[in-house]
Length: 357
Ligand code: FNR
Image (tube, protein in one colour):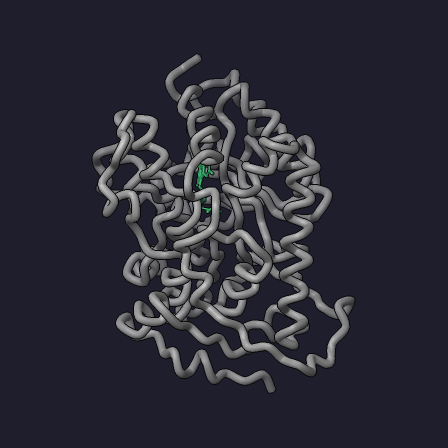
């Protein structure tokens, strides 16, 4: 087994074992929706269809990028794709660098398209990719969109990781220009700040997954892989809490910029809060993998069905019939996230006093 293939298996094992697989620290608990005692709605009226860069999504929840690249993970992607197909959810594959270099692992990615021939699938590569690699990754899974991931903290904690991050924005801009499918730039649990979002926007990016801190923690994972027993708490807690990242990037209000929220989204109410703050969709990784490891495709489906049902309940209890209505709801932000937003110039009073016509 190559070192890269062993790394893929380590990531799965440690992501499930790690503290980030459980909730906490993403800040969703500081975001509050306002209850309506007279919602004047029936559950069957709630319609949460959405789209990302013109690609329609039946539901605003997706399975985020995780794996591929080792023969041992083909079964994981098969189970995730089966659940995605049954529930009509978009799904991203894990980084395809391995698939571009090692033909024997291509099947671990392609299985996702085979199991879900008509579903929305996102390809995934690092931000150092070339347009040729981007095209090949898209072709490999017949993807509808491409994710380019940013993960500098993780790379720096990996013995074999990148140390030079120059020129990434230029590479992203070239891919956005040359690729035939839309590009989503995503973090990997460290959060896109408003400064980064603005840089990406100016480079032509029109979809960002803020993927903030508080869920799966790749500094913790890489420290454990490297045999570090007690890591630097400042680095193991690095990044913007997911709710802070989303609130500050949404407040930029850049015309045509579409947001996906991820990082510590565990429950339907987390999803409802993120959508109310301005995300067009939310994405979940760690807990989906944990359920797959314990219970296979059926467990993944049960978890996501529960999350979708609770999201619908939260929408009804706010009186929101669709995503547009949810995004007009008042959102009260307190605690650490509120303090962060206040210091970063997010208009908390305007958010808390929005009113649905
Ligand atoms: C990931 N993630 C990830 N992201 C990416 O863009 N490319 C990748 O190859 C991977 N690999 C990967 C492996 C495993 C095992 C996990 C759990 C996650 C990151 C993922 O897409 C997401 O951004 C973070 O995990 C934060 O979301 P959660 O896990 O808190 O819901």
